[in-house]
Image (tube, rainbow, N blue to C red; front, side, top):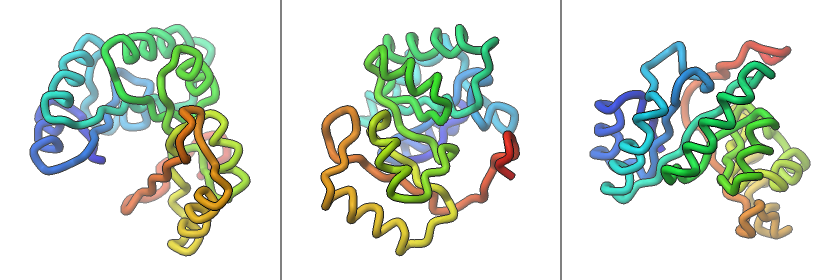
Length: 179
């Protein structure tokens, strides 16, 4: 999976062999102030480009959502569902709940801080893919993956919970006590 902050980086990710691309739209994603983002009216074209390349597209909605942003979040989820985005990557329970309610698949963002099997079991009630906390060792990750298979831990879609991990980067959250 690779980021696609604008049409040029989207094209580069698709050419370079990424199986999927994640993007942000507007300001409800963690990269909204650090890079370019797409606008909601560009989302259908991004989906079309990904489909033409045989790739999946994920929409990051991974910020803390405030009451004043709920309508914007719902509108974006509705549009993502309408144009065929494969899933949203989310950490806020309002996004997770709303996306699930409209049949939009959810991937649990690294901001969920899933660092143990109990947390993964809980998240599996709501997400089809869980991005594990960055601080886990390879041994921790292997143990969680083994337990998912042994215990048949499935996401809402009925398939075994899929796990993703970051292979680079640092903790990038400094809100609400996570520093």
